[in-house]
Image 1 (cartoon, rainbow, N blue to C red):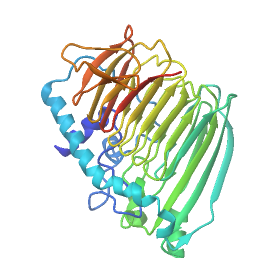
Image 2: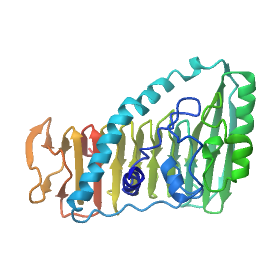
Image 3: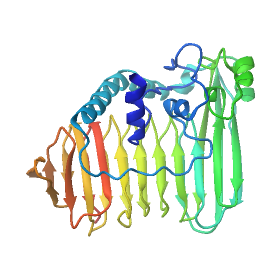
Image 4: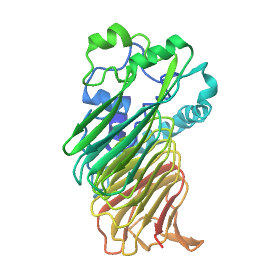
Length: 370
């Protein structure tokens, strides 16, 4: 039953709730005996998609789900929120003092490369610990810098980190994949059981080291994005026109000057997205602990679904609530206030793409860009 609830949450586009993967150094919530077998479902439960993922589609919100199904998802979200507030949130706090917790810190290792990828490539960055920053600056080249920092309990553990963890760089004519590989991937597709069992399987949850990768990329404006990290930093992207799928666990998401459509989900962190043109297809923005802030140009037409448990919904745009939904109850600081502790739906303008907004502990702000 726990896996069924988790799968429902993941299929709805949320960041992984079972993976509290605070770091390879700290207490990771992984079953004894190692991770599950190398299936797609196993990857999803650990928060990692296929090695070369296509951008996931966002399911259009159309009609209400049966009450029982909605209740089960709602209950799962609340349970996850309480657990993550106490545990995964604490991991994010402790990470801020990372360098002081280790006896050894190796000098940074920097990898820089420029690749030709056309005007509309897919850029995929699959990280575990560390921030990701993407900036669109035109052209047909992708330029990236990956800064690797190793912290360890001892020199031997630092040597183990150098041996165990590495960055896979896979360029192609229309895409670039950056994939941080290591013991935490055991059970993922592409790793043989012999490799994980012989060396990684017995110590991967407490190896005595932490490896952080900080990514900075400059990409063509038409780039499509598939970005994910778990600990140790925010994900930021600016100026891209392609579709996007952005996932974080212990950190925020900040999308600026975007002109595509897609999804941005976190667990512990705020989600902000600003658009230079209104989305043409469906979008999803979700977090558990944090606020949602969306900025759209004038003339927005959208079909909204929105919910917050501990917070309110604020909108610069007039929202026509569907029958039975919570009406606009007041105005605060010039914004309309919609109070709703359950999923509600409304329409902005003449309607349009489905935009789903969902948080548990935080408010939702729908701004009109000035």
